[in-house]
Image (cartoon, rainbow, N blue to C red; front, side, top):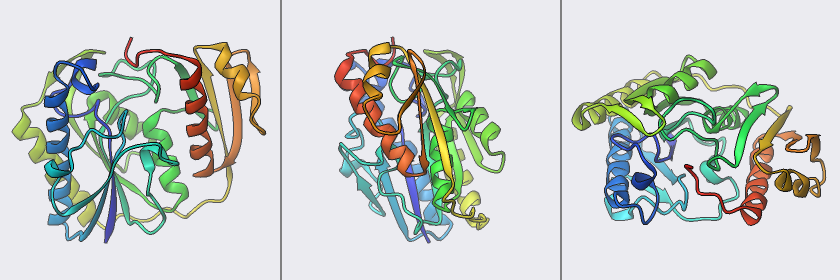
Length: 276
């Protein structure tokens, strides 16, 4: 049973501030250690469920946060960037399940370190008219490949967002948002035990696989900068809703991959810190 684990950082146990999750931040080294502990808890849960093949994708920022020597030896690691599928690099229909560890709520939500992919540069996103962030887009892409997302860890806002998207996904709140940079923290040992047990149960239940989809989906993104939107109109198939909002339609995961190109264009035109 091969499973895929996408590891973000904002939703990791104990982390609440940009200094916890950005290279050079005063608590970043501690943050990456905490990230490894949450990921390893999920790996232990998968092993307890009988999983024998685990691929972990470092999905945060530079995508070089997880130190290979800190990762559980039973897991393989995809590290670094660029990646054609970004936070889902390496995911194919050959996997039986997806785990999302350390995820956060979308832009505009009152969750810990909430944003959608690019700090405040992306103001809002919709998938087929439905508000979406990193959680929903990962779920939809996995579903299109025929792979179920079975568990997610993060703050309570991220867990609520996942439940709204798909109530069958098991969630583990490791902290409770008091504001965007403040949270009531769950004790570390308790949080890791909950991650391990929830993943074990979710994978032991043999979750049903969604039917792979070849239908087109439409992704709409509202940018903070009109310059980004105007530049993206040079990409075939991208159209404008207004001066700061663009959309495109394609099958997933091709649409997810195209969105990665949009972000690289936006990064070349802006220099916004991710959590201002």
